[in-house]
Image (cartoon, rainbow, N blue to C red):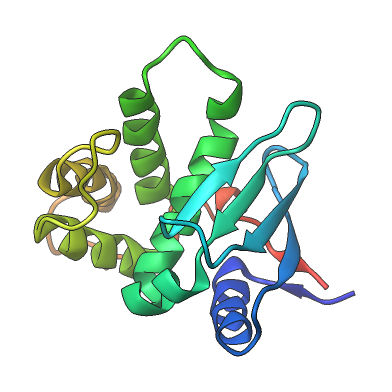
Length: 180
């Protein structure tokens, strides 16, 4: 059984899905310790979404064509965003608003995704992309991602003393590797 990192998996998944009509892959969630199915759905109107049905495990759906248009890094951010919803158990919570869930998922993704992925999302959101009634304005979403740079600044101390790492803050909490 071969285990791949989340980034390698998503890159290979993107390539695979660009050449096949649909695919079903399973990933292992390091925190929740549950299997999460990721399923291509070319009819999905968004890049990605968590789908739940009573009595069944949640599934991450993604639109491979929208991922191709958005680019690998931005699509990977949306993947982390959806894992944020799962890790934060948003599908089981009714005590917070949809807008609060989206803000939390953006922050979770900003904290756990590789820096290059967060920067791609930041550029997209800063230019007004990613706006919706539930997610908020793109520029507001970009501001949420600054949590990552604030953490980097705090961990690196005074400017110039340390190099900035592009690795996730905690690789063990990154979206999980793929089991093949």
